[in-house]
Image 1 (cartoon, rainbow, N blue to C red):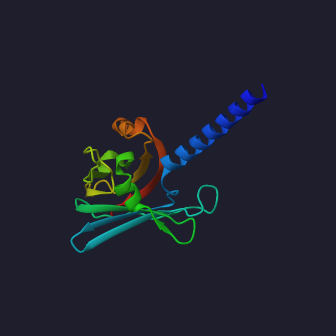
Image 2: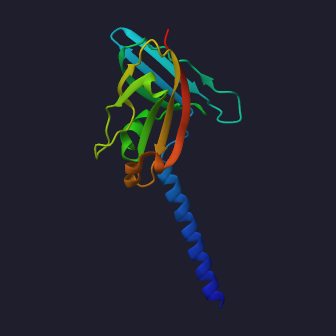
Image 3: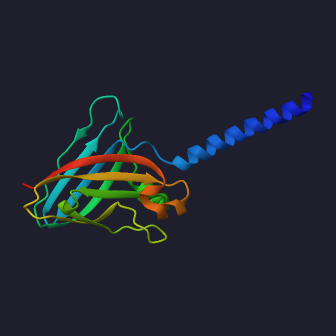
Length: 180
């Protein structure tokens, strides 16, 4: 009887360790505390940031307002950082290159006519990733709104096919947009 209990306890410990290791390896990157958006049109550059290095419940986040020109087509790029410690970690290559098959950054304008955003970077199966593309700002008759940036992480790359329906949220922030 003592032998069976010992074997069961050993098996339970091994299983728990494996689960923890698997869970850690599924995450694969630090917490995203900062999102930076860069819009470029010729010599004109528009930047916006969401920054919350101490996470929810601490100091309030710093949120910039994006101020793109109406009826203008920009090239956009997104940078993601973990600024919770020192040194700051640039998560951009990890999420948009090394783990592109298990991540999607959705850019969701509200109202939808605020901007037309086309993602150009793709994963190994041709699915959108969200780190770069084109951003066409809407008409000057629509001067204000927000763009929501929703980063989804999929434990199984096949879950990425279901978009927002599956996966875990790594980041969900909105930046105000105001056309000058």
